[in-house]
Length: 392
Ligand SMILES: [Cu+2]
Image 1 (cartoon, rainbow, N blue to C red):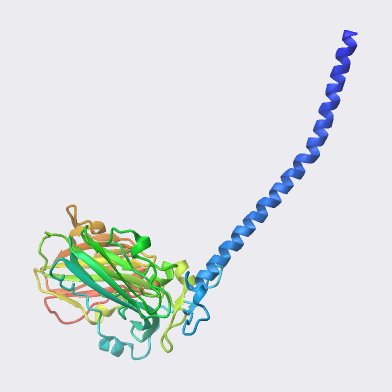
Image 2 (image 1 turned 45 degrees about the vertical axis):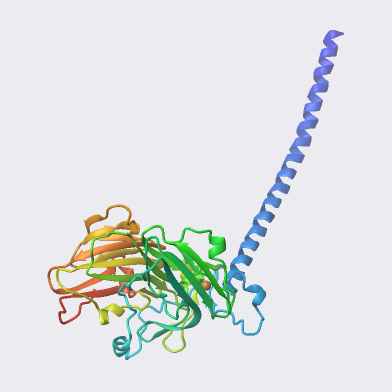
């Protein structure tokens, strides 16, 4: 009996196993298929949501949707999108027949570092407006600006000063300002200012350097690409003396048309692909070729450089000399490096560079990432008031 019983038990156990295997063989693939279907659906929902967000951001920056349709709330002109749109062709180098005359007549963006105000408080007023600016000879762009120009005004303060910022938004959409020099809660200080509104906030300039400021309204990408950036120098208590000081802001422009007739606007797809039409010092291609910066022989010339991007870095280089002092990343707390050829300035970062040139001549300053030179990021330093020009 015991043998039979055991056999029977084994037999029962085998049947159960077979039934279980049959059940599992059917159920597990079905469960896996359902799981796969759920995963695909969830991915698709996520992709749809991403596309919707990207489309909304391209059509109207965040915070603007509730204003669409309000009188006077013209939507910014943009082309392209994150959803696989095709960029317009390149308009690099586009120029009218009288480009040389226009370049000569152009009033170059003032590169000389302005004086820092005296006293404990530095008042900074930035009027935000939309308007047409020139970005290359004969090339117009429908920009968003601080103070009517791109870049906005160069600001100079000293360590320890309180910087009191007043924004007035005279444009038809929300904007803001983000100071990289400010150590302050950004959700409070850098919040949006609605059309027609003012905002004031203060910060103590604690850390020396040269910093970017820019509009931080979402998507900051398009606000920067449209021209809302500038440089602020926070000068330390002590620093080696310089005879001349220049502020250079690097930036790229991404155009939806050549801008030779009607002004161009932002091509978002081109900007996402980082294929600029123009790359500039202080907003205008080649302006310091026609209107060189100047120095005398033996003088120490200091360049305060900010790269506003929105996306490309700058590899700062002065042809015909070396950077005798280079405060990499605009770190003015530590000692500078000496006698280097080229210094990287990251998008959203800065650098401070001294040159001391003893031989009269024309010394180009460039981003040695040479595609940027090709697209306009070249200027000249005329040392010793010599005649002539130079291409590079
Ligand atoms: Cu803005």
